[in-house]
Image (cartoon, rainbow, N blue to C red):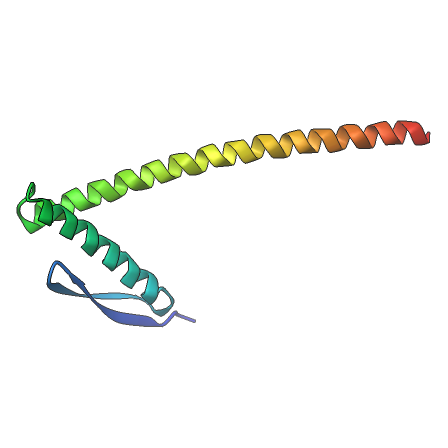
Length: 104
C-alpha cells in the first residue's frame, strides 16, 4: 500500500514553493522550511552576500557544517557511553564470577 502524499506550500525569502512529501512528514517539512528561511534571512540581512542563489548556497554550507559538528558530538557521546557500558559489564561479570566461586 502506498503512502499518502501531501502538497505543501512553503515560503522562503518571500517566495512561495510547492513541495510534495509523505503526509506523515508534513510537519517536519514545514519546520525544515522555517529553519532554512531563518538561516537565509540571517545571511541576507548581514549584507555580506547578495543574490538568492548565493544566499541559498551559504545557508546550505552553514547547515551542513552544523550537521557535521552535531554528528561528531554524537559520535563522541556514543564512545563515552560504550566505554561506560563496557566498564559496568566488566564489573557485573567480575562480581558474578566471584559469587559463583563462593557458592561452589
